[in-house]
Figure 1 (cartoon, rainbow, N blue to C red):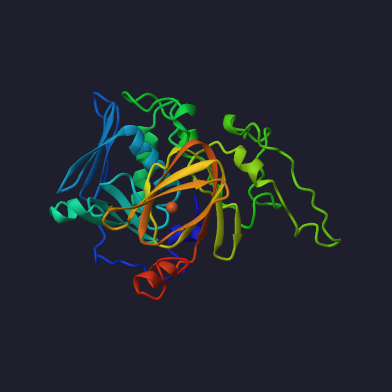
Figure 2 (cartoon, rainbow, N blue to C red):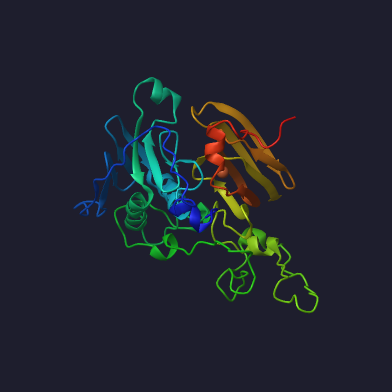
Length: 348
Ligand SMILES: [Fe+2]
């Protein structure tokens, strides 16, 4: 999760933005398991969610939308783990959520120009904690034994078939949210073989040395360092930027990536990417309409900044290391909506 804990609860008593002026919906339900598939179905307002052996069906008053179960579960896992994240999490071109930090808009087609033009877009607003409760029950019920929606596809079982056990150990992983920095006393620990983080098969060439720290007398508990490459070589999940160091609102959220970012992330602020190893191809589209804007091929050492008005999805053919740098200030989205802050980090 690439956010501080406070961002999910609603930020520092700031007013919760509601650009569409939507009322809050209720009507949450968890329905009994289906006699044939064994899966529960779920209701949130006018949205209903159902899965079977291969597919997930999201039904709203304007569409019945079908997604492959693996894609849906991988995206749902990120939306749950990231607490709805910054801005919009598009599960695909149709379904997704937009986070207003305390309240969430959930939509079908609202971020897709063709659906909007056809009058098929639908948006409903929910209290974040109530919708999150439904999402958490959904990811738990719909994930079968042996399948880990956080894992690279070659490192996990399959999600298909009728209900077969669960994998709550995977879907309820503790989030890495360092309060100051990984490795500090009392903070998130450095990863080792001993605490359950072996080196990933694709990073067995990564040097595992740790830096020597020679603190001046009296500062032994204030100075710390760790080998970030070694830390990332031991990540057991993919596409899961985690807070590893915090300086006020500056959050370093490194992550290891393999296969496809399971969501098209629509930022509500600028977001920096520093490619630490290997390569990622980014498809960049307009945030609101989904119109294609750019394809970026990021190689090790490359740095780019995603503007605040786009959506992006990455493809990593070999496991790679990415540093995502976020400004976690709760004021930024509204400043951008009000035109007080730019949509790009740098103007040339
Ligand atoms: Fe992003």
